[in-house]
View 1 (tube, rainbow, N blue to C red):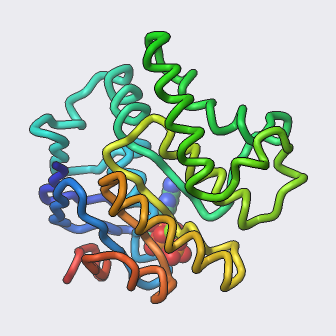
View 2 (spheres, rainbow, N blue to C red):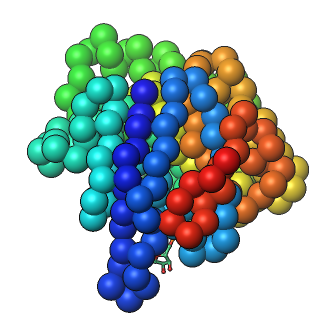
Length: 221
Ligand SMILES: Nc1ncnc2c1ncn2[C@@H]1O[C@H](COP(=O)(O)OP(=O)(O)OP(=O)(O)O)[C@@H](O)[C@H]1O
Ligand SMILES: [Mg+2]
């Protein structure tokens, strides 16, 4: 489904971060990426999510090069196909839980049917992740663990093909981290969401089916 061919990226201040990196992921896979701080995990996820461009190489998503897309096509690729979760929940403070979750449905033009089906999917996911009763609360009224589950549902509401999670349990205590990790792998199994998780947590990494390490600009099994 997604293929990275010889991806390289350097930053002026730092030099080479990714160095001819090769990676392939099939639909329904779940992958952990570990590696030292500064090894380029976030840089790699940003490139896969089309938030940043590599200096060289190619990225093929479902047979199409995402680097040859216009800015509009690239935004559509991101909105329709990719979900994101970061270390901090990034919920909008002036919107309720439900409004935050439905936000991605407003990011691009969709039909009324698609909007309704997105709403239904959101409801199902909220029940599935145990946050249905929080729908009218504001982010400051819920716990960090709950907020991260809200973020998970928001990332999945558009039914993306791939979920990119960058240290998703990094701000959670052990119990909430374990809960979120379990939900992530359940989303992979039950909904077939393809997962790419960058993390320092060996517990979270162990919940994925395939394991890679980012070192010296390359991914190793
Ligand atoms: N926009 C940028 N401009 C300059 N340097 C950058 C930029 N983004 C990342 N870097 C540098 O690239 C290197 C890789 O950073 P990155 O954030 O991808 O590492 P990481 O593996 O995610 O680290 P961590 O485990 O701490 O999250 C670091 O040395 C970082 O300082
Ligand atoms: Mg990082």
